[in-house]
Image 1 (cartoon, rainbow, N blue to C red):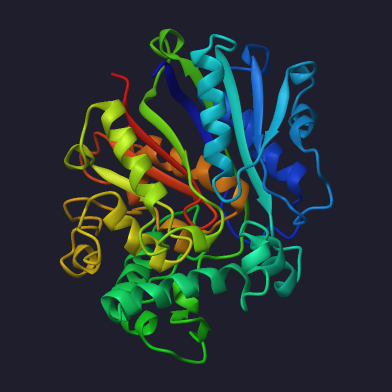
Image 2: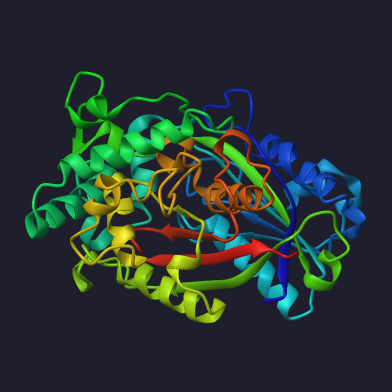
Length: 388
């Protein structure tokens, strides 16, 4: 790869009552450039990851970046969308521009404002990332889709409620010390395991603590070519960046396997010439705890049907052999759709530059990132390491 991350910024995720998409963009765009010690004049291309689909009345957000500084005027700016993997899609597009030598410096912004909609409208908007001809009537919106996946997995491998509670508890414990996280509270295993008034069943076997949060937020990063990055104060290089898409209808695949995720990891390892054992940490797409469980298997951490071992034996805890979601993941950090993939890359870059503060993984040398759109439909894997 020829692309590096050389600067970044990140809002706290949560409910930003006073902000809209434009103001969230403004909080991160110039700040990321300043972090890279660059300015708007240095930027060759702007990419904005924004799912929207009705979350915001303001569509066409790409030129909103120009509002933050007049020096952005006349720069090419494009909105990128690929469901919940929108942020990674924008980053991968930036890498392609650099690889093709169409750009030397690319500013990538991921943003979403979700909380302005009512709860039912949020569910209907998210469900647009499923195959509506078959899944449009599923009760509970996208939670219903993953509730169905959990039911199928439970039928195949037995009740995994202990494992899902362990994943939720782990991610909330990690997120409790993440200053950018929406929910900074260590809920504990017992709360996550048991149905209660504050932790009701949402869909299928999934409880509230199994579901990621409705969030507002933004994150941004600056990409450059390696030659430029070598002159910068910090740089994290892409060993690989792979996209794999699978069928949209759940009926056309075994939804307990996440085969697109597995294929993306395999291709990324092959391209980077590394294996899972080389990774110091993983940020993976835990939109629901069942997703993280299946992703353990898809990345090759355990055989199929044995993902529960990874959480039960502590492998994926922050002090385990492969920390997964040291940030708290989407479960605790929050999941503003367009910002999620950018956030995962920003926080991984922070880990690799030993600047992640209280969420820092000791001796982090290489990070893997998995960000997916839909139910393992658009699958993006990045493998990052420090440039020097």
